[in-house]
Image (cartoon, rainbow, N blue to C red; front, side):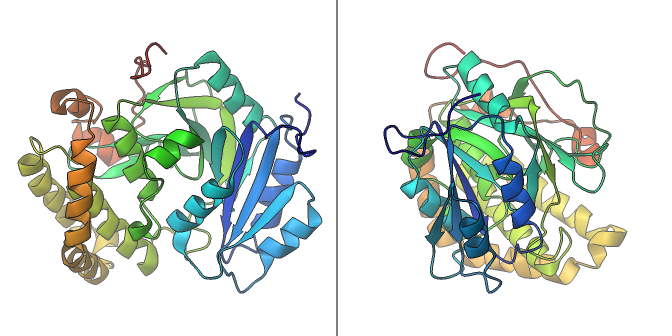
Amino acid sequence: MNEASGDGKAPPALSVVIVAYNSAASLPACVQALAAQTWRDFELIIVDNASPQGEAQACAAAHPFARLVEAGANLGFAAGVNLGARTALGRWLVLLNPDAYPDPDWLEALAGAAARHPKVASFTSRQVMAADRRLLDGLGDVMSAPAIPYRGGYLNPDPGDTAEGEVFSPCGAAMMVDRRLFLTLGGLDESFFCYCEDVDFGYRLQLAGEPTLLVPSAVVAHEGSATSGGPKSQFAVFHGVRNRFWVLIKDTPGLWLPLVLPLHLLAVGVIATRKEGRLQAAITWKALKAALAGLGPVWRARRQVQAGRRVGALALARRWTWNPQDLRGRRPVIRPLRPSRRGGS
């Protein structure tokens, strides 16, 4: 167990950033779980997105190891994380949702993985459902060929003995990334506001040749969408549909765009015609119109992203799943870790 680094003599190894908004029901338990961590060499930054409930101030006052950053307005998850990252002191930036409750050895498991894999810059956790830990919330994020991302294994039974391996992208609810790399890549895309900004960032990691390692021993219990009305709320559906489209346009290499775009629209249409999807058909259509209306800035961002791409289009496509049964069953896709562009693993 490492000693706490709160005396100013050296920066902490890890900087944990939590963005708080309408999270009074979950944030105290989340911060209490961090207070119980076996790994102590970390700082906690709570970014208050002007939540009307005042939970960030209360938690910071109750836990001296927490540092409060006032955003002054509801900036959204992406901008809130970026604000926290700019004030962080640690080499490693750890993102944790306010409705995610880490096991006591969570940070120790992430730090241990970083020590075992010194060339890897991105790590993600094993997430189980807070309401029933026998079920998975996700084993990293998966990108399907139609550019419909999903959390691997969502609502499937937790196998418990999953081996470490590479996944497409880290889930922003409980991930760790090299802070300098995070800032170099531009952080999270603030135009997304919330939802899929972690997938976009993970996609950009892929384009930069930086793998993400799933660390199954790093466990958090996650409620999911607790601050936005649930995963099927109009807010969640709108931002999910719009932002998935923006990820496709921004990050898909030109070779694949003529194939992936119609597959994506077909998949969105199929989802919207299902029984539960039909209830959200109007908001789905509204989100697609908003996605098209906002394409100008996304296309400009695409030019920058693709200009810096270090991975070939064929190699990138091998990181997707082309099996439609994976998407339908939300199966995890975990591959052997490949060397990063930094050389070795």
